[in-house]
Length: 278
Ligand SMILES: [Zn+2]
Image (cartoon, rainbow, N blue to C red; front, side, top):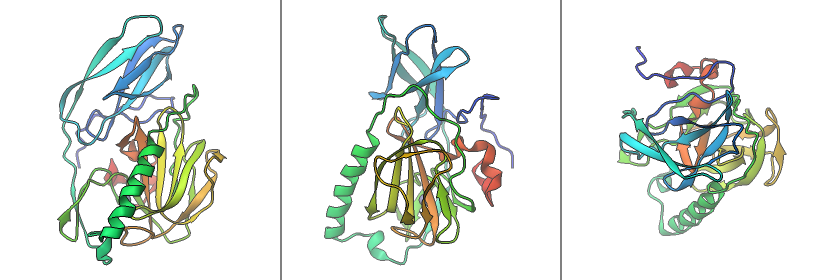
């Protein structure tokens, strides 16, 4: 298969691969690092700012709902006038995916379920809006689990033939109890059992970079706990809306779901069927 999307990952630097498409990541170069770090916003949300090759850069998560065409980030340098940087978002057609769920309530929830779902949505929204100002961001991500890549980010999903939201993460199928390790250092934001996501862990990596682990059989960390890369987070399971045991892994930048494959682009072939996501 010919891969027509141009992806760039700066050699020797632990950075995610870039892809200026809905669900992808855009990098913009800002001021030299002899200046204080500027603040950047996209869609009124702060974006991650870090250093690369003597410059401040920003990494912007592009929402799946973004229309292709020109978009602008707003840069506010310290003590200087604000300016904008324009960039192009290219279209991307994600595949369709048809899933049959035996538990019909997970596809058509009853009124009590809807109350619970609404409450959980509020809790998750609050968790994901979290911003921790820290200069050092660990962008050198490792795969959180070994297994078979059973679902790619962005696929347009139909549950029991009914259209639902696009797939927001990357699925790794493995037997129940398979270990999930922290792909990078961070702090646990929240854990719990959610209607769709099942047993869940959210980890803050700083400046709006957040990872999520869903459908677990066991949670081995607590909110507020600092974790190092490689620490045990939990175990793969089949809780929530699933067809079988797997890890659903989400990545967020500026409160936006982005393709987790971009963070482990060099390691995808370690997963069975991993080439599918490239
Ligand atoms: Zn999934």
